Image (cartoon, rainbow, N blue to C red; front, side, top):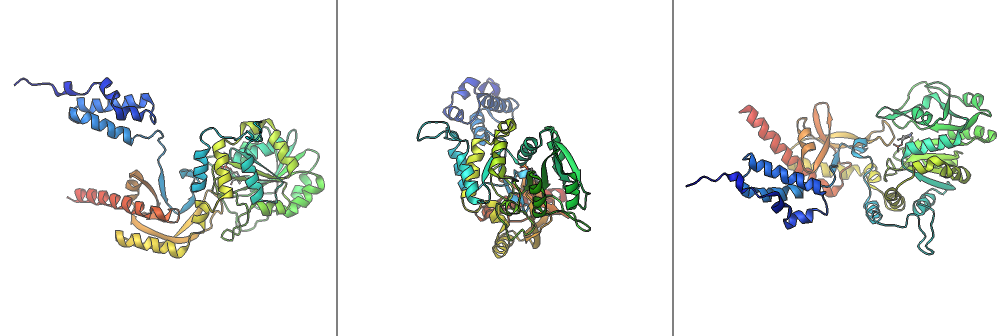
Length: 443
Ligand SMILES: *Cc1c(COP(=O)(O)O)cnc(C)c1O
C-alpha cells in the first residue's frame, strides 16, 4: 500500500477560515489573531503533535479559549481589600451594569430634552453632591494624582504650594507627589520637619507668593513617636485669614466617617473642618472606578474645571457611569469586605477547611493601598504549603493567595461568598497537581 504523507491531510488555511464557528469568532477576535491560531494548529499537525483530523477541533478549542483581552480575572484570596496589583476596587453589580450601559452611545454631554449640549457627567456630579452635602461643587477627573496636579497647578500659577515636610509622600512605583506637582511647574514651599510641623511653620511661610496650602494624608505609612501635625481646622483659620485656598488630599476617598477606620479622614469632615477643596481617589475606599474627586467651594472647583489641564485629565464616560452607580448604589464590594462579619468569615473558612482537610489560622486582612496603613482586619485563613501558591495563580480561575512565612494562605475576606465553591474547586485541582508532582519526585 502506498504511504500517504499525513501532512497532506492537514486542512488548508482557506478551508479553516471558512468554518462557521471561525466566522462567528470574528465578532470577538481580530482577523490577525484568528489567522495566528490557524497557523499554530497547522504547525502542531505538521510537527506530528496532533493528527490532521484534530486540527479543526483544536482550532475551535483555541478560538473558544482565546479572549479579546489578556487581562485575567483573579479571585483575591489575600485578605488585602484594595489590592493595587489587582486593579484596586472591584466594582459593584450596579456599577458594572452602568458601565456596560454606557459602553455604547450615551448622553454623557447631551440634554435629551432639548438636544443641546449639556454639562459632562452631570449625573456623577449630582450623586457626589447628594452623598456629601458639605461640598458646594464637585469635579471628577481621571485619578487622584490628576486631581492633585490640577488643583496645585491651577492654584499656584506664579505662586507657591505650601506643604509640610512630613507629608512629602511617595505613592508607589517610585512616584512622588512632590515630583508630580513640580512636573507642571508648581513651586513647592516645604515647611516644618519630617516628624513635626507646627502652625507657626505654616504662618511664617504664608505671604503674597502663596498660591495654596496643601495638606496630604499619608495614607500608605505611619509616623509614630515624637510627632506633631497641624489639624485641618487649625490650618483653616490661618488660611482663611490670609484668603488662601486650603487643599486637602485625603487619598482614600471615604465620603463620610467609617467607625471601622477611626483614623481615616473623610471628605465631609475635612470640608466641615474648613478645607476649601478635598481630593480623593474613586477606586480606593469609595469602592468605585479609577477616578479623582475634587469637591468643595464652588468658586474654586469652577476655576479648576476651566483650567486647560482639566481637559487633559477628564474622566471618561465609563468611569463617570460606574462612579455615579457606586455613589448612588448599595455598599460596593470594598465596603462589604471591610465590614465582613467575622463569624460568617469563620464559618465559610471552616467549611472549606473541612472539605480540604487543612488547618485554619487567625489571619489579619488589610485595607491595602487604599489607606488605613497598618490597621489590622481580624479574620481567618486556610493554611497550605507555600508551593501551592504558584499553582493557584496559574489555575483557572486564577486565585491569588497570600504567601507569608513559608505558607500559602487563603483569606476569604475579599472573596464574594458566591465564589467559595470556585475557590474550593481551584484549590482542589492545585492540591492534586502538587500531590502528583510531590509523588513523582518521591518516586
Ligand atoms: C492614592 C493617593 C494619591 C493618588 O491617587 P490615584 O487615584 O492613585 O492617582 C494621591 N494622594 C494620596 C494621599 C493618595 O493616597
